[in-house]
Image 1 (cartoon, rainbow, N blue to C red):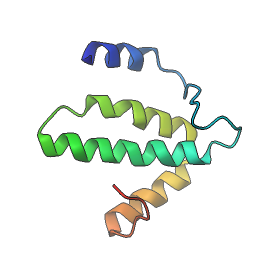
Image 2 (image 1 turned 135 degrees about the horizontal axis):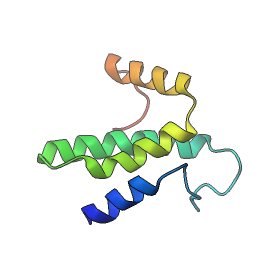
Image 3 (image 1 turned 30 degrees about the vertical axis):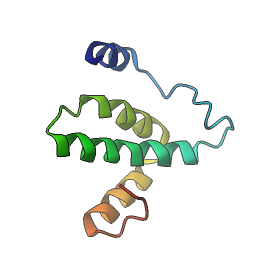
Image 4 (image 1 turned 180 degrees about the vertical axis):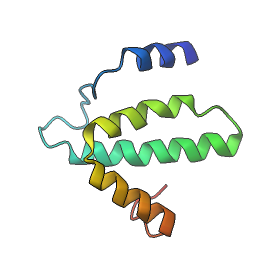
Length: 86
């Protein structure tokens, strides 16, 4: 499984089509991948497992989300007032 994830990460260029978000507006896709990345990290770090599988979510949200949004969300997480459930 780890080999599959590594192979996908090496071939990664931009966010692939996601059937959950079929429209042109990718705001929700951006949000979901940002939250999924941090949930994944929290879950795997809590188990003491390798967080490499979470990199997929990070790369997707980095390619979809405006950096201003990411910076704002990071600040909100640090301050403890992030609106998402991580």
